[in-house]
Image 1 (cartoon, rainbow, N blue to C red):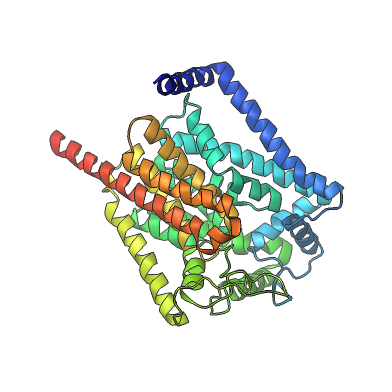
Image 2 (cartoon, one colour):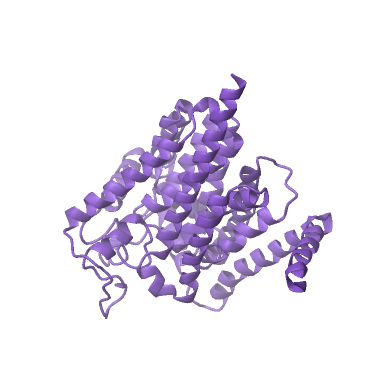
Length: 435
């Protein structure tokens, strides 16, 4: 009995301490320390001559850009650099700082993106910029800290993409559609996923945002590179990138033939192919001992039909639970934005581990709703999702072979669908009462 009373008292005392100004300052200091440690480790690898993962590729690409060399060329059966040309332009400027300077710049940008993502996720989750409850900041970052660390460790820009998407959501809420479209376009120019965003904007009749996205993409992909590469060469670069990256076959996706269907890819395409076809789920480097986890051996065309069917079903259910424009609230929009990010994570053909730092927004919204005494559905579905994600910590390869991260994301998607449906019905009841 004493233990059951003691736990709430301790939690209440901790809440009081954290909610004081001193507590919030302490949390900010902890963030700075953690971000500094995460940033320092890639720099230590560089100074000690260790493996630099993608940081080396970014530097080499930047130097090739400055030298006027080809960016998209085949080596060992695939492109070394797989991102759109605007990324290479940025890396060209960053490479002027030297390899160490480039790493310092990228980890600094990553830290700013992390801070902004945590702040904006909490703002969207609560609908209030003046947030005093520290748990809305702390819990989401803690739950995705492994994925955040991966972005620093490997040198991936997914936290930056998250910050851009969250900024676009804030702009949409403020009816600044040109800004929203531009931010999504920048994110799409870093890692291409514009189709889902454009469809969403069109469905929501955000015509200005959709047009802004398309125009900004054209500017980023063709007009911006022209002064550095020439218009003809910029067009040729876009053609080569499209030919190399917009590929999907029995062998693999884009320029990841050996990793497309392995445990590292937690997308709908990756999980479906390794569970429904006899493909090597652990292929990476030769020599390789094949690992198979499929419980069926379907034709590639049959798997594609299943993938398309599931993707359409997810999209249709999402559309079905969206409230009408007149019934939208800050609360329903936050849930809707979380669902959009979850949909992108699942349907994007290549979703590696570090992509799932995007779960920060769903977890921020879930934390806020639970703290406010709402969200019973997202609480239980979220706990199931966390249990699946935890399996990846205990059995890193074994759990991901069977798509634990994908299925955890799917569970969150279901929970948020239920929450949005509840919010929609509450809005309808309120509208009927006012009428």
